View: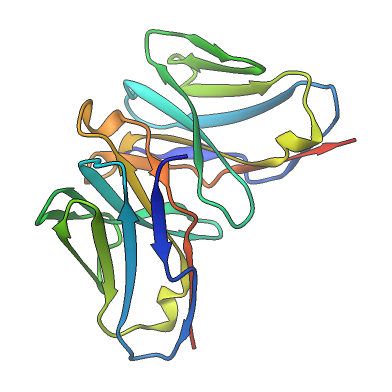
Amino acid sequence: SQKIEQNSEALNIQEGKTATLTCNYTNYSPAYLQWYRQDPGRGPVFLLLIRENEKEKRKERLKVTFDTTLKQSLFHITASQPADSATYLCARLGGATNKLIFGTGTLLAVQP
Amino acid sequence: DAGITQSPRHKVTETGTPVTLRCHQTENHRYMYWYRQDPGHGLRLIHYSYGVKDTDKGEVSDGYSVSRSKTEDFLLTLESATSSQTSVYFCAISPSSGGSNQPQHFGDGTRLSIL
């Protein structure tokens, strides 16, 4: 079955550095991957969607890549700020219902 | 922000009691979803709806039922709550076009504790 995996360990980085988060998937490549941000006590907020044939997508300080050979998506935040501290989730279609399935998320902590 | 309201935001109840959670949207989106989020499991789909009175099961539907009598409201019911259903429940919506790959917009969740 399709799975999606994110590093469960928190990522701690210094302000101003680039944060890189990893999302790995199994089985066939999905047509799309989605990335969300979740703050404590809040629902996830959609950030970016990348299609299989796009390889890279950018939005302001955010960049997402899609590598079908490695079965991996990387999520980058450049010039990170303490306000970027949150949990970041990736998602793909999969499972028995062919609906979105989410990774467990990676907690990013940006230190001032 | 997408207009999604979940109620209640917090609830504590006892094992064996019925519980109903409500999701209300003002976006007129066709699709509505109920998820639960637990440590180590991430978001898991319980049930979803693709229109009024059209619902289907997700991956963790046992012990839950749903109803959608109006476009704007999607109810999740635990007929007889168990401690394993203690969780944070999120409602999400997505528009009618594009199908399952459309981005979803989430409410802020209901924290449910079953003692």
